Amino acid sequence: MSSEQRTEGNERASGITVGQLLLTEYQTIKDEQKTRIGFRDNLLYVTLAAVTAVIAAASQAKQPQMLLALPPVCVVLGWTYLVNDEKISAIGAYVRTELRPRLAAAAGSPDTAEAVFQWETVHRSDARRRSRKLIQCAVDQGAFCAVPLAALVVYWVQGDGDALLIGLSVIEALAVAGLAAQILVCAGMLGRGDR
Image (cartoon, rainbow, N blue to C red; front, side, top):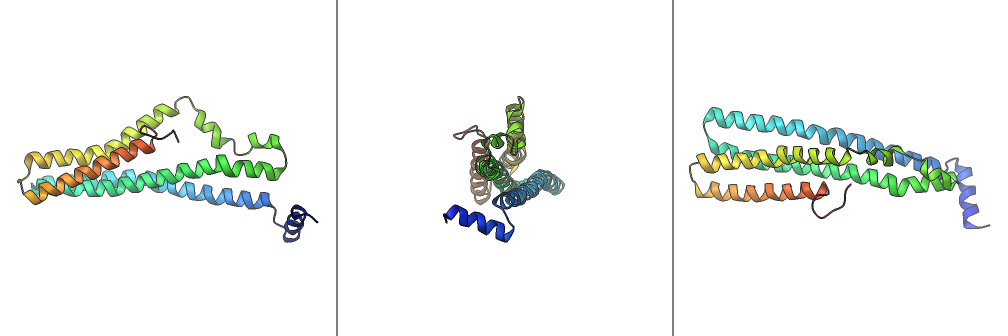
């Protein structure tokens, strides 16, 4: 008896097929993707709320150094957003390149490969996809990078000139610039292909 026949016999004996396992895996990772999408999208709202709170507090107290709280908050939230966005894309790529062919093979028909999980490929061929990605990149840059950089500029113009705080603000500016570069890389605009 060949190993393939033994595997097939074991599948029948346990009542679970490779196809069922693959479909379960698909459902599980799509649930993770859905959760990550919700979490990622809510990070923009959290960022807007944090920015509003810090600006209101700094304005009310007339203390421009309070604006130095914005860059770390925006960098942490922006990095978390970016990590989740990357995982969302990785799940989609895994479904397209790994799971889809394996499920088609388990179905036993080479013609099945094109029919399995078509949405995973079709939605990526939309003519306006590139423009939406550019707009999303601009939104991400604005929320997570432009706002904290503007806060730093306001501090540099209106701050008290404390050397320690100026040094801290320069480090924060570098962190924001690093996040801005990573956003561009992940959007496929610097050194990496389109996701």
